[in-house]
Length: 108
Image: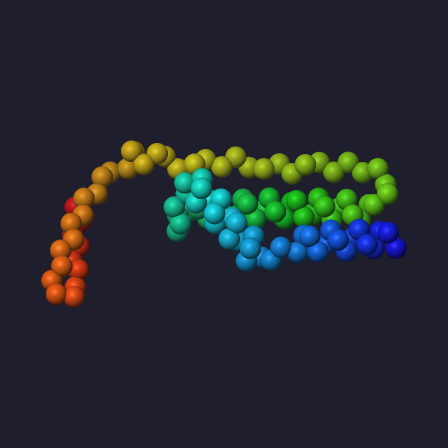
């Protein structure tokens, strides 16, 4: 009975929706400086999802072997390389003008 209660509490705590996890991953990748739509951003998202999967599997293994002495190794997280600083990108100058209800922007 005790195991059932503990298992229920852990499973409920681990039931973070996929949408919430994905939103958290987007925030983390944005904070790392990756640009949405790039291959690096996709790699960041995949690495974070794989880390979550490994963590859930580690917790499931602990629950499955409840009461036994089990050593489950901590997940090995991949090293993410942040994008280069902004000063390494070429500059872009844009000018916007209005004409009536329209805005025209030119960049060079």
